[in-house]
Image (cartoon, rainbow, N blue to C red; front, side, top):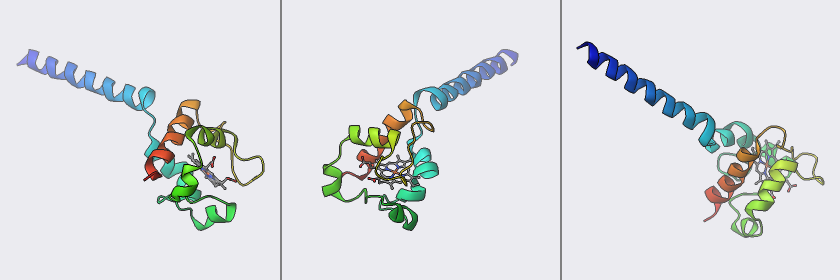
Length: 113
Ligand code: HEC
């Protein structure tokens, strides 16, 4: 009886460690970052909110435009913004390099048909 309780205690402890390391080290939660930091301008549907359109966002679902861009372009733009467009806030100081790379891939992967 007693040893069973100890085993289950150890087991739940290791599960906790697994989920802890997943959340904080290995994976970037791209959905959450998009919802918190990007959807304000780009919209959940990627077409741009009224605010974003005022700022000059592109429609992420426009396949012709999307084909003209690369993941590297996106990484660069998310990091540095657009020097010609002061409304495009650079995320280089807000997100880590790993997060920016994940977001560039995320936008390309989510909206490309
Ligand atoms: C304050 C509004 C705003 C927020 C918030 C915002 N963006 Fe943008 N984003 C823009 C604007 C404006 C442009 C168009 C820039 C241009 O081409 O002049 C843009 C362009 C882009 C592009 C296209 C870049 C290219 O090279 O063509 C990507 C990808 C992008 N944003 C991703 C993101 C991601 C990811 C986030 C969240 C981490 C984000 N944006 C948050 C305003 C915003």
